[in-house]
Image: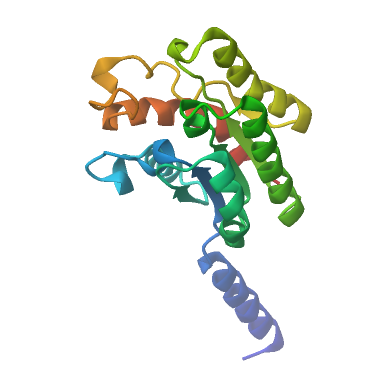
Amino acid sequence: MGRAALALFLALACAAGSGAEPPARRILMFFGDSLTAGYGLTDPGTQSFPAQVQRRIDAERMPWLVINAGLSGETSAGGLRRVDWILGQKPDVFVLELGANDGLRGIPPEVTRANLQAIIDRVRSRNPEAAIVLAGMRMPASMGPEFEQAFAAVYPGLAKMNRLTLIPFLLDGVAGRTELNQADGIHPTALGASLVADSVWRSIQPILINFH
């Protein structure tokens, strides 16, 4: 084989080899409570809203892997205790969905705010390049108007201060609709989770597309 032929052969071999390698998959992590975990669903692995976001990602052939780090019953304090361990997965995009259990237990909103801020700080300390998305929550009017308003203000306040992408209300269009929630009136059905996934997808799709 002549030198020119050998050079061409090696060039083609290198090109073929590089083309055969699949693109590295980045990590999209959902860190939350039972809403993220898919509590009460027949098959959370396919019906939870993070799983349904993964299907949207796969349909668009995007190189992202969803990790569902939801834990039923989790509070913001519990999330703060376990976040260092979960960050070992090195997420590129971190969706923070916590606080609902705080509110339902009557924990002061300023405590929830402090815990969520500490989680945000931990994520940025461990991976400064990670994009953080904050999923907002609201309390029912039965908690009292002052508590309801103070709680609702936690999320936009944190998003503004930390320059985060904010999903104003995770359950927008789902909360309060009997046909989209389980018997407890709190956790979405599979159809409700699909609508949550739609809302989340609208917020995070541009981040995934443009992630550096």
